[in-house]
Image (cartoon, each protein chain N blue to C red):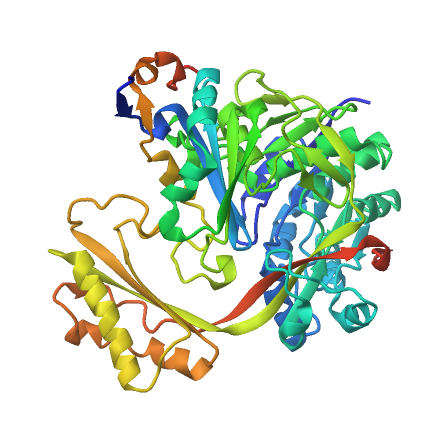
Amino acid sequence: MTSLRIGNGCGFWGDNIDAPILLMRHGNLRYLTLEYLAELTMSILALQKQKDPQAGFAGDFLDVLERLGPELKRQPQLKIITNAGGMNPQACARRAQEILQKSDLKRTIAVVEGDDLLPRLDELLAGGELFTNMDTGEALTSVRSRVVSANAYLGSQPIVEALKKGADIVITGRVADACLTVAPAVHEFGWDWHDWDRLASATVAGHLIECGAQATGGLWCNWQQAANLGDVGYPFVDIQPDGSFVISKPDGSGGAVNLETVSEQLLYEVADPAAYFTPDVVADFTSMKLTQQGKDRVHVAPARGRPATDSYKVSIAYRNGFTASGTLVILGPDAPAKAQACGQMVLQRLERAGFRYDRSNVEALGTGACVPGVLPSQADPPEVVLRVSVHDARRPAVERFTKEFAPLVTSGTPGVTGYTTGRPAVREVFAYWPALVKKNLITPRVSLLS
Amino acid sequence: MISTLPVRLSDIAHGRSGDKGNHANVAVIAYTADGFAWLREHLTAEFVQRYFAALKPSRVERFEAANVLGLNFMLYDVLAGGASQSLRIDTQGKTLALALLQCSPHAPREERAQPSIVAKSR
């Protein structure tokens, strides 16, 4: 068979909601993937589901699906694979089906589950799984009572099973992002699950497109050379049966696909590029040659892969107090010094009121605060943004902090302005706990919506 | 003895950075093969750890991706708690690559003069 075109129209929950529609309209895709789940998204969705058993998925997907209606009518062969199901793929699928029925579209929807380990966490702990924190080496028991979500990153196999069952739309919970792309390649080409090189090649493709426009000119260091980033095209890959592929974007769209944009994205959020772990394979991102093949087309040669490990990665989130940040603008002269003084005033007044915080931070944005202490200090900036943040186990303490910003407007240094957004909001903190679990303890489930 | 002149890293390389929990990765990618050879020689893990010392990385590890003329640095425990817990404005280390590209590691004058390691030919 000829090449297989897979495009990704969403890189995170909050991404441009027109991108999937434009990509589908102009991309001539066989598969559209939509990626919604960042590391901590699941904890937020878990709490939503606790409050409402019908909630807990990426609602943006439903809006996108509704707006895709006319395109889906025009392109009956196109299939969609998305992790929008979050903590509640079944509820997401039911709502998706309602939307399709309203648009008079007949599509088979499949649900992939089994990633949610929270209901089984104590059983797994009792069975000897430690869920040791991969970063700190601590055992999970120290925070067990505060855990709100625990999800294994499933692989491509259950998605392929769903496609084999005839699914047009596959809605998953937590799966490794690249699998949204690997699965359709395995399904269409009939690759073997031990064909490590091809699995690695498709993993490279999935990794490159999973963040959407980051492969097509977004964040590119030489962004001035990109054509019309305002109309940036989202990426697709044309995968060959041997695993090699071309990454590109719709003709006439903005942005750029070249060796620089693709290389930057290849190494994005990667540790050892020679060993990129997914549930399917250990992919060697250093093994393949990249070649510019005409304007906005980069060819990626087949990659090498090694056997997958016997574990799934697990992303656990636990409650860890509360936080809030407030900002005000401060005009110079001496804006950085005034910002520091105002920040200290806030903390001093809170201390007078009996509140000391587990952690606090005063920043003067405009002085290199993104990397505090790294960049050499520049000439006195005309203005800075004062940002004060606190973190504490006690919600009332953080609430009290949010009331201490407005007073700076009359009792701070001269040059204070920009108090237009009202009191800062208190946000609950969910800390991240990466761990592993043995694959043989986890059973992915695939079901078709009747 | 070779006298030295500062080179801005961004003259010879581009890059991107992101988070992995409380760790960050910083990719630095040369524009040319000569530039990559220069990076391999001069842009050591020790240099990067010193450069970002104010952010207190517990250690820095360097990997190579010669196929894209890239070095990839893992900066461990550098994000003050990471996306969920950091009180810094850049909770995810998105800006670390641009900060590193602004550095001026001292380079031998003769290498500074070599146009072949500087960009813009691709």
